[in-house]
Length: 83
Ligand SMILES: [Zn+2]
Image (cartoon, rainbow, N blue to C red):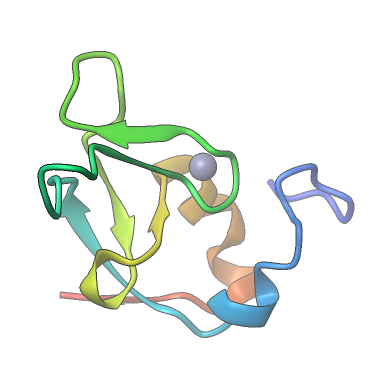
């Protein structure tokens, strides 16, 4: 559940409200870019063992959100899950 002053919130409503997200496996977009972080809790996505491999991404894989944060914030942010 989300708390009103959840530590993970730091202005994401400016760019993630009504976001259309797709469940995806994280893949390096280019050889120099080897990880991303969850927009909320900073959990790391990469192709390495021990990091997250699956999450929810915005169009073009620009932003990533982990499973837990997606569940916690989907109602507040009106996330839409697209196939
Ligand atoms: Zn997260």
